[in-house]
Each structure stands twice: as C-alpha cells, then as structure tokens.
Length: 133
Image (tube, rainbow, N blue to C red; front, side):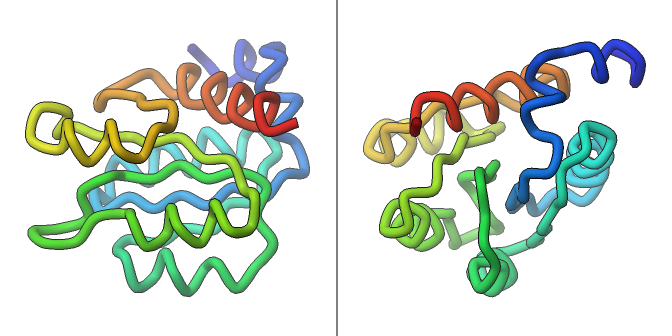
C-alpha cells in the first residue's frame, strides 16, 4: 500500500491526531511502523525495550502496538498491565507466535503476526480503538 492509498484508508484518517505507543525491539520494523503511523497523522511515542516503553506511559496515549517479546527475557506484560489500568486499547505484534503462544493467549488482545503489511497495523489499531468505545 502506498502513501496515497493510506491517506484514503478510513483507518488512516481515524488515527490522525492520535497518540500511538509503539514498543518494538527490532529497529527496522519500528522505523517502518513509525513512518506509516506518522504518515497517517498520528503522534508516535516509540520505545525499543521494556524500560523505554514504560517510560513512554508518562504521556497520554490513545492506542498502542506492542511487540510481545522484548529481548531475551523481557515481555510486554508490565506495559499491558499499565495500559489496562488506564483503559488504553492495544494490539500485539509478534514474530514468536509459537514460542509466545501461551503468553499471547493469556493477554487476550488482537494479535498481528510479523511480518505484516502496515495497512493491517493501521486497521488493527483502529479496530482496537473502536472496540474500546
């Protein structure tokens, strides 16, 4: 999907002006996601690891995209807990569905498998916001 197609996508306009937390430890994937979200008019707060992700929670957030596995021993679970306390919708993004299957199931949130098209990410974030009301 090119930038012109994204601007016409209803999910793109719905993210305009929203603050999106992206926690992703793979820098190249994060760059692509962050650019897509910024093209959609969103303000992106990016964290590369658990510590940075938790720090970004000091800001008001409308929706989040979380990599489940953040390095060798960390997961996004502490961030999930904080987001739930605040009523912030989120989507999980993982390339480790088999290894992290039980953890992902226990979180009970929408899941996108890496790699996926950025248009899927836009739609999933919009869906999460819609479901949260």
